[in-house]
Structures are given as C-alpha cells and as structure tokens.
Image 1 (cartoon, rainbow, N blue to C red):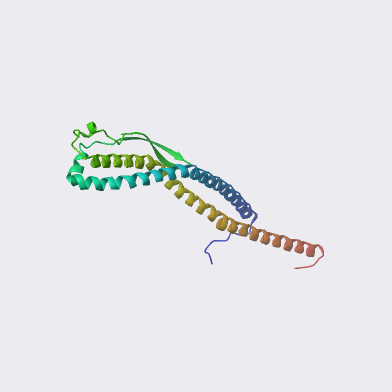
Image 2 (cartoon, rainbow, N blue to C red):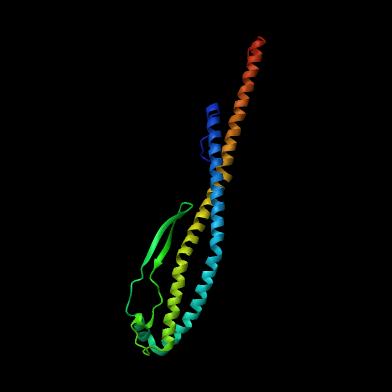
Amino acid sequence: MTGRQVASATRQNLLGAQHRREQIGRGMELLRRKREALVRELFRLARPAAEHRRTIAERASAAWPLLLNGLSSEGYPGLRALGWPPRPVEAEMRSGQVWGIPVAEILRRTPIPRTLAARGTPPGSGAPSALQAAGAFEALTEALLEAAGREALLRRLGEALAQTSRQVNTLERQLAPQLESEIAGIRRTLDEREREDKVRLMRRDMGQTP
C-alpha cells in the first residue's frame, strides 16, 4: 500500500489525469533543458577554474617556503611588523542570476600587492626573505580573490544541477509512471463499463432480462 488515493473511474477524472500528464511532460522538458544549460555552463567554467586552482597551488607552494625563511631570519615580530599599517580591502559587487541561481560578481576591489612605501617600511629595514614572503602571500591572496566568485558559482551550479537531476528523475521514474498507470486503469474500467452497457442493451433489444 502506497497510501495514494486512487481516482474514481469517470470521464472527468480521465480528462484531469490526461491534463496532469501533459503538465508533467512540459515540466520534464523544461527541467531537461535547464539541466542541459547547467551542464554547458559548468563545462564553460571548468577549464578556467582548473587553471586558477593550478595558479593557487603554485603560488601557495612558492609562498610557504618563503614564509619559513622569513621566520627564521626575522622572527614572528619582524614579519608581523611588515603587515602594518593595516588597511581596508573593499570590493564593489554586482548581483545577478544564472538560470534562477543568485550569483555575485566582483567588479572592482582594492589591489592587494603593496609597495614598500605603502607598507611604511624604510628601505633596508627588512630582510629580503621577509619581503619576498610578504609579496608571495599578497600574490596568493590576489589569486584567491580572483577565484572566489568563480568557485562560488561552480558550487551553486553543481548544487542546482544535482537538484534538477533529482526533480527529473522523480518525474520520469515516479510521477509519470504512476499517472500512466492511473490513466490506463481508468480507461480499462470505462471500457469494461461500456462493454457491459452494450451487452445489457443487446439483451434488452432481444427481450431478455439481465
């Protein structure tokens, strides 16, 4: 027992079930088109995303050894001093939608790399390894910010694709077969009633009583 109420075998219910079947068919077609569009968009973004991930991995691999060298030469207080003065990092965002999925795009933002003058570091006051570490991590931060919007969009597109695929599977494998079975059952019952009515009419015409 599925707990699903079976419709009475009437012409009105048959027409209603056929109308729902048409609606489900249109819904499946729209969802298939959405799924295909999401797959195309994911493939379009996949290559640039993979390249950015390689860039991030390369910059991280270069930055961490420089940080260790800087710590060995300047110590933690010396490296911390290179981060001063602090500064705000601002970004101008633009919201949009891709197939109904809310997305955000960074239009403009504060550049991350700073010169020695912007850091307020007097010439010759920092070890080369410490300055190299600061520059390497600024370059890594730049790469992370550039990839942030694309990575968020990829994640949301992937989630939307999974949800759309589940919806298509539910319609194709559950609702549509159930509705087809319901329509077939109503038709069989109506056909049987029609045959019984014909038999009764034939018996009446022949002067027989059922």
